[in-house]
Amino acid sequence: MIEFRNLTKRYVTNGKVKTVVNGLSLHIAEKRSLGLLGRNGAGKSTLLRMIAGSSEPTEGEIISQGLVSWPVGFAGSFHGDLTGLQNCRFVARIYGVDTDELVDFAEEFCDIGQHFRLPLRTYSSGMRSRLAFAISMGIQFDIYLVDEITAVGDASFRQNADKLFKARTQNVGAVVCSHSMAQVRNLCDCGLVLNEGEAWFHDNVDDAIAHHQENMARLAAK
View (cartoon, helix red, strand yellow):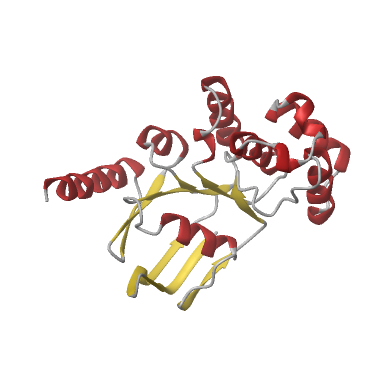
């Protein structure tokens, strides 16, 4: 469950005030998968970070129930001098899950070979994201947050990542930020459209996608 209570987020960029959302009040029930839609710069990732707790709202609050993941695929908090294996063990201890089980799962799924036992600073951005995705999926969260993760890797990895994510979210909630409408339609059942500081919730994801595409068409016509 996620509830937004009079949520407002503003920040200053290039001397101008940017409003992401203004007075958003919304209740997302348990086991719903919410797609965040909007053009580049609309504030999708900012809203995701607020749900994760890594960014504070200007006004209002976000209430969540259960264990919330970090943005799936985000490796920014991993230690570059530690190996993938060591980072995995560290995360397992933080979340109180079986260390060996998480290591075995992550190593097999991310499929980065010997790099799993090399320092993270030697990884490409794609390998970092694959490792972060695998570690995220190896922990049973109540709400998964996703920011474009399954766009990395080859077609086989993206297919496996989508399949695994959909299986994980059968009985839990999720918030998905993606530019791929096919992915949003595949992974989500409802949507929130962000545009110029306003937010519109659609109980049906197809309606949300249609709304977003109309916004993009109007923007292209200007």
